[in-house]
Length: 543
Image (cartoon, rainbow, N blue to C red; front, side):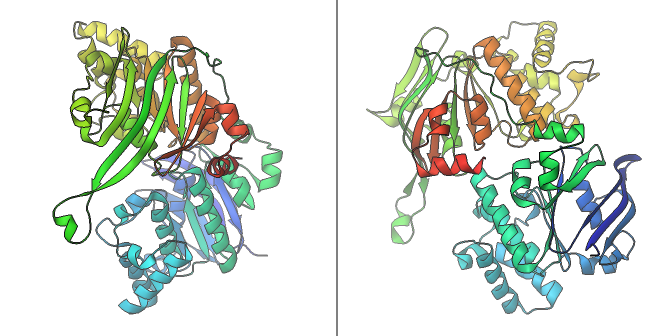
């Protein structure tokens, strides 16, 4: 059987630097091929190059689609292929979708341009596609803008756009990376169902081997621009031949934490924590007052010294909102209940039982408390200032918490903190004067950890600290966090949707859904003997 797509000796370079180095692979009609590798392996550039979408790239080789070389045909011929015969789902729908157009209009526009349909015909077809990809209330959602949809809904809308012209080949570039574990399976199952009903070929680009195992027929593994191994999924994953493939398979987070101490002093303790936001009311009532949206319902938690409390749940469950409340980053009027913090000298807290506004507003998030409670955010690229050098970013906390230090003393502390997280000037000449964009995702996350560590905190809140990282880098960052906890006696509150991270890091687990704590207990109890159906679903989706 002749291949639908055959890639021969594909080379891609930017500014004279070759990033894809003469690779070969093929996809048959109706087949699912996974292109797997870490950041910088060249897998996304490969997919973009097939449609000549890699800007400022020099491309050579062949990409024969139905006998036509997409790398050699005219731009006009290629325009005919894009969308019609070969469609693409991009990694981040929020940046791929037009923020100024409604979802329905964006889908309909493609149908009008490619199929010559009228506006009404295109709109009707857009609604049908939204139904096909499982978006509830399709008429209402079609009239909404991308920011009004959840992450999973935006990804479904992207799939609807890609399928609007019935393509023969779908290029799916990390379509589930930014989604929760349950949503990942939903999206992947959706693509699989649509692939079967349309006999469509799929090139899935990912670093998640768990998804590859459940989805693909064949796998091609990329490292540093080379395809180092390919074959059937069952054969390659069961008997990997190349060292890099073996390393990928061995990259599951490993548990290496000290046992929980039964009588550990509480570092953060919350009781009946309730977080609300105002929301507009419809009709006449909305003129005079606002309604209330409850983001977190009566949640309680206890984080002990030297322990890790894992909060797990899907997007919109309230876990990140709870973290913001614990950090004192929400309006005082939004937070109700009791929160106690262990300082170096004493326990400080507030009680909203008498007067929420007065007591929360008077809660003292003073300098010593800020010093003992630090945070590492999900995306280091957006949480590190692009205009500050690494020395300024990491040393900023010292300027506030230890203002008596001289510039030379600060620099010594900054270098020590960076070295502690595995970054030094022998690896990165001129390290202190570099900027965040000069580092990889894993390196930027290490810089964010160094920024938190430099002020010697007792507790660190970690908000999805590894969700944007490849499996090999994720393992490195988690190993680093475990080492720091053992050496410093740190307490972690880790927020994640990844059960593997919970399994590796947590002593206690709290499961959230729709603002409610549905279950909590020790990590062994929660992962081996979950009681609630939602917890069972989360655990099953990670296997």
